[in-house]
Image (tube, rainbow, N blue to C red; front, top):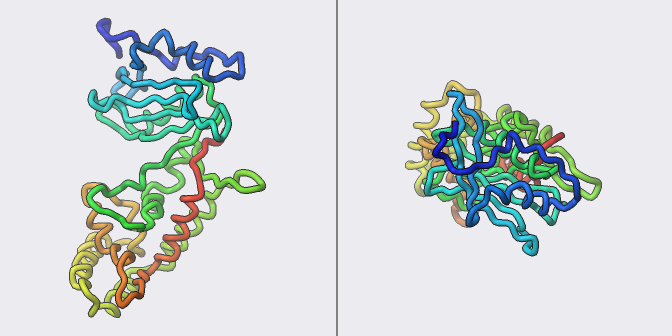
Length: 287
C-alpha cells in the first residue's frame, strides 16, 4: 500500500462519481484534474496475491479537439504496468480500448485487466474493447504473413478472454455477431483432422526440397517433445516465449515456395480461416 511519502494519487476504487452529463470529456477532466501534474498522474493499482497495492505512474493526454482526445500510457522507464486506455470516437463517444496489458513483477495480467476495466467504467466509458497483442508471441522470429493469431488463440483459447467477459465480435450490416463458436469449432476440427502422421507423410513426400533436412530436424525435436498429444497443433496450448522457436521454426514451410508453387502444410487452410475470423473481430466486453 502507499506510504506517507507517496505522491498524491488517484484511487479508482473510491471514485464512483456518476456521469451527470453526456459529455465524457468534461467528466474525465473533472475527475482526474486534481491528480494531474505536468501530464503525469499516479494511480493506485490492484491488490496482488500478497495483499499489496502499488502506485502506478502514467503520462496522460486529453484534448477535446483531437480525434483521440483521451489516452493514458504507462511510464515504462519506471517499470510500471504496461497499459493504454484510449477513447474510440469513431465508434461512439463512450467507447474505449484497453491495450498493452501484460503482467509485471507486481501484478498478474488478470489483476491489471480487471483494474483497467474498473478505471474505464469509473471514467464513464460504457463499451470496452480489449486489444489483443498476444499474437506477438515470438519476438525472435519474423512471420512474413504467417497466421500467428490462429496459433495464439489455440494457446490462450476463447475461455481466457471470457474470464473477463471479452468475446470476439464481428460488425455486420445486421449488427454485432459473436464469433466464439465458429472459432472454437474450427480449432477442434484442426485438432481432430491433423495428426502427427499427416506431417510425417508431408515431410517425407517433400524430403528432396531445399532446406528440408533442417526443417525435418526441427520438426523431429518438436515431435519428440510433444508426441504425447494427438495433434501437433494441440501442442500449441503449451507454447512459451522462451522456447518459441521450437514451435515456429518448422512451420516456416508455409511461407516457402518451390518452383513457384506454395508449400501447403497440413492444416494451413483451417489456420488461415481461424486467422481471418480473428482479423475481422474485436474483443468486446459483454454486459
